Image (cartoon, rainbow, N blue to C red; front, side):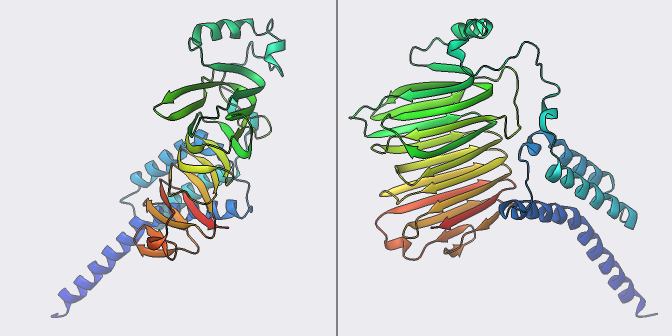
Length: 353
């Protein structure tokens, strides 16, 4: 009889522990699934379609709703149901490949694809009328649909240049040089691009962006918007990319880069940098993305991270404290690279080549 209160206390304590474990079961399962997606995709085990996150994000509302409805139900069947919804939702995200069905609700009437807009002005009379109303900037060059080329001439006195790129649903590639200041060739499916420039003090600014998207997107990898960019290697560059669901593959190792800023939602971001200047700053902010930053083996680098649900792989770096990593000898190095990584459910990796 005297031991009964103790037994009841132990029993209640076990129940509380079990409830706490059950409460953490679904969030833990979600984190495991997200980590598994990034790992399997990075090792080319599964061909994850990043555009699924753009169209199927309501799945997370369904998962959260089911978890709330059965939050106080600790029965085995409720737990099985909650886990099943998580697994089924992530299975749809991972293996769903809907092709052109993404565009079922976008209007296609009156749309035609032109391989050369300049040679088909009669067919694009409506588009040209719209362009004349929209393009009031004398410095702007706009192309609509097809395959286009954009050039910004190089001025020998340009010491520092800034590239601003904006627009989602596009694959951006940069890995070569040009005798122009800026050169881009595009594969335009359902998008319009604009090239503009202006001067900010001593910095020559090049703006390249998707102006509008009248007819929606095509997320088919073989029939999507693509941009291939080349830069002049002489100036010091500042590179800014602001995009939503997109793929960025930038090899900047041939250029003098002072700063890189990448802001994106879901997608894939791969950056390669050369030797740092006195100070080179890299800032990456993503939603749910796979991010890889490649730096030279000899570069002195510091990484700071600020994300609760993202994973990181920083081989060759020494952990100083939570969210802070450095290469050996960083504090005494003359030229330094600072990398700041932040994201929602992203996988970050910094490689030394």
